[in-house]
Image (cartoon, rainbow, N blue to C red):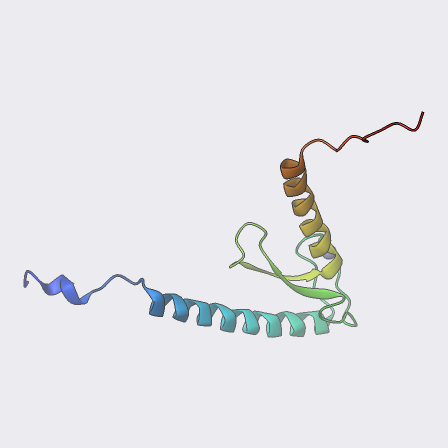
Length: 112
Ligand SMILES: [Zn+2]
């Protein structure tokens, strides 16, 4: 084994690799979206958040969407009700807002 044999085995990092990963991620996302749409169309899909049925008449976007994991956006969880995603986002947003804002502002003056 040559002392410099490992030189060519560069670590899988750097911009090019990250770009490939991004490209792969978006392609995987599109594929997952198509698979989810087919699944919803069969009428057997359920929302991964609430576990309830997603009817085959549901429209992608207003009624259902491809859901990501809340903690790791790279994870695709499957179809979810749009309203379930919005309520999850609202909960998360409210938690952040409460932490940042802290106590509610008091009224500056009293009318009496
Ligand atoms: Zn749901």
